[in-house]
Image 1 (cartoon, rainbow, N blue to C red):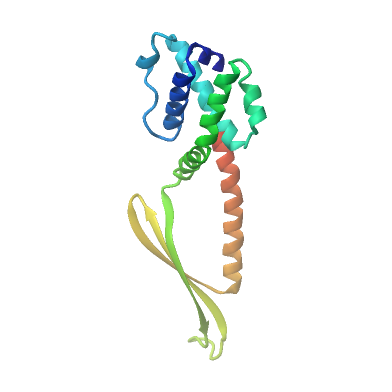
Image 2 (image 1 turned 90 degrees about the vertical axis):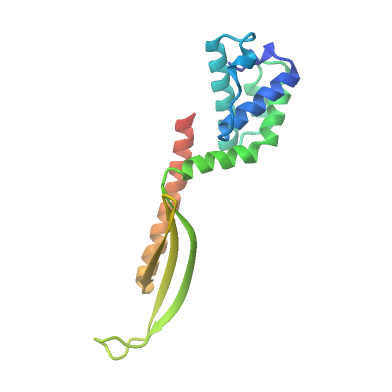
Length: 184
């Protein structure tokens, strides 16, 4: 439905596209009242949805300029160039907003960490251990409250933690991509 952009001058098209990106990034969206003489409510909503989807997909899929322009073939080439210029100028901002939205799904976030390597020489059960232990201190922010978490692990436990974190990172990236697609 980006063909509806044809009703605007290039200057107004640029302004609208920037406002759509603002909305996508969590700031004030474009006001329907500014465009009520140009489009009906249904057309307005379709145009906003189309532009938002175009910006999201272009950033998520790292779409080339040629593909973006081909998706804008229904509008004049000057307006297509305006939309493309707004997209490229604010691409990183859109990417950060989409990632922030995905990351905010979990309420707990890691704020800082520190680690120490210790050598356990003995214990109350064994007189000689010589086992390296990792002491990991995490500062986790949950619901605005900073909470310290301390873990002590041997080599095997550390290996399992690293494997778990690597798996979680892969799942997070897959989930991030899925979440972004569901937003579209």
